[in-house]
Image 1: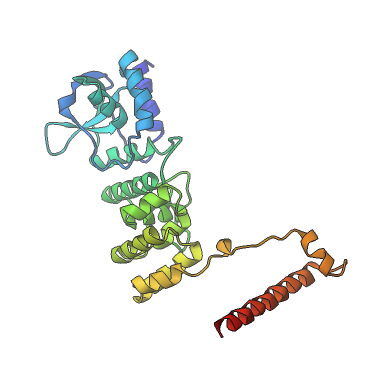
Image 2: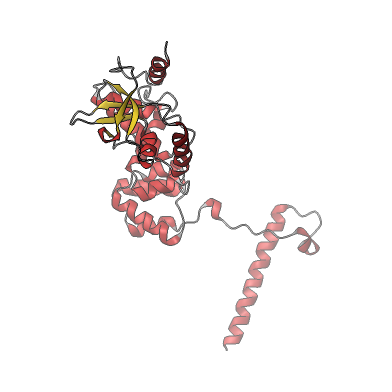
Length: 305
């Protein structure tokens, strides 16, 4: 088997869901950049930190791995299936042509290959995986294949073999739920400012509610806990969530935000019996603070007379 045939086979080993996909030719040809367009629904981002070393490599060695393309259904151009970053790097380097392999496949098969060939990247954002799963599910639906993913947070376990070989059915559905988030909240999930689980719960809020929530987050510099997100979701489903309710729920203290004051034991031990329990020490300190507080109030009252 020559190198070109092996390259094609390796690609399709990763995409068993495509049916009888055959390359139009195994020949690697040079194609003008002007004849190639990206898949504009590509869920994966081209990060600057990845582009610099890629550009340096292409500048020195050229494009070693050819792009995969297919004839666009609506024009005389070829849509990228695999190789968006290489295409961008070539464009930045002002290359006029790139090596490609042309595949004779449908749009849906191309979308599935695009998703599967990128899911195993070392660094992939929650949003990328979310839109990738949705893209693949939509492609499967259009192919007429059965899918019973309803994208709900809680529900019966369903088969997700057609969408993911790694994540469970419920996890696939949670990822797809993230596509319902407004961009500003989805960015916070990608930046780990909001946890994945919280993001899933917030995805059930409508766009207006999500916008009101983001405004509160931006103003108060705080994010919802899972319990708060679940309360927001419940009120939203009941149709009673508004900006005032969002503020009320968000201002409730979170368990991990309760302030704990630590006092060195030697500062209070001389006022207590030596064998005092932790509970007795806590009660002692609580009463001491209460008495001292009353003392301050009495002093304030005398000063006001």
